[in-house]
Image 1: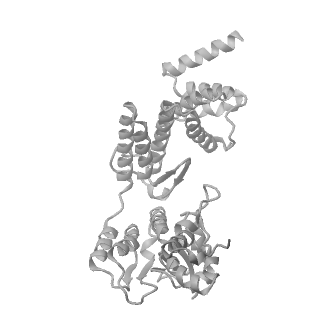
Image 2 (image 1 turned 120 degrees about the vertical axis):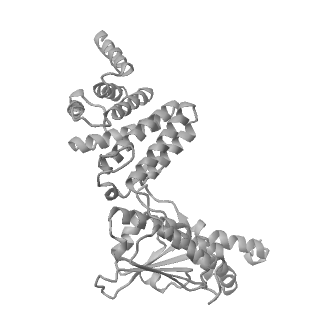
Image 3 (image 1 turned 60 degrees about the horizontal axis):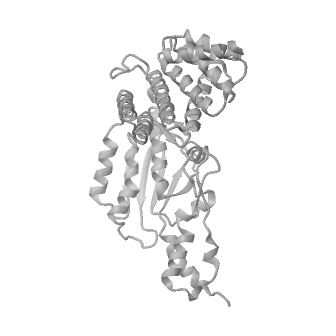
Length: 405
């Protein structure tokens, strides 16, 4: 029996078209954590025959696309790699593409241009990732946005001059509230509603929290996480710690941490719990405290793998910053840990929290059977926490066991 696709009811065919041609179905997960997702649209269905083309085209047109144009070719790579924004297409295909609801045009009036434009196409669901990346870049490089001009144009690509519904206008424009202090900014086309434009203007005029405010908010979220941890609400604790990282522009996604806006914190803090310290130094202290809390939470949850992962990564990063050794190995002979004794004399304010990370990672390593790693981490924790009786007792037990051998 021959299956005839066109014999299916029209509503079933429409459902199939949307399943095949929507941005959601075309989205492909990243190959690794350092790459953005990607898109692969199965457009072959549009070429099946004239009837199916006219039916399925509507499903493809239901997607909301954004076209971004700049005079800098390197911006495409930056948006993709630094912002991890999935890009559908670039180059000549993007230049010719007209089925977009929003055109984002960026340039710098005071900078000589070569008269060449470079475009990319993204889906609406990825627009907030683009504007967030732009916000982080402006925070990291103070004074970036005052040199940039942004013009955005709304349109219904399929029915000229038709007004875009208010809900969609908000979805298209609201993310640009993250983009502040521009040389100039203008919105054009598609009968933009004054209420939507006014909402956007207010968000753009709202200043970003200062580094002092970010750190104070992060500290409060950390403390809230500690309270949740104390009463055994581990899910809430982890979320509060994740939100604390976000408050200082560090995104936690699974096992990955993405650190943004480093340059924003390089100045002396004038208020808050870290007053008098440099912002980047205070941020580092808070990061170490949060990792110590993450490892403790995972230990309470008996999730030894996650506890070891979070602790071990920070230990390796710390060791790398001191002696350049970025290997993943925390085992080996004890003489390889001479850097611990040397670093313990540095007067590092987060030394106690780093000691907690060492000890808690040792506990996770023991549960997972990494005995040499556990011994090395316990020795290191004892150096960092000379007055912690629990840690010192654990080392005495270790010494007694070695003596009996």
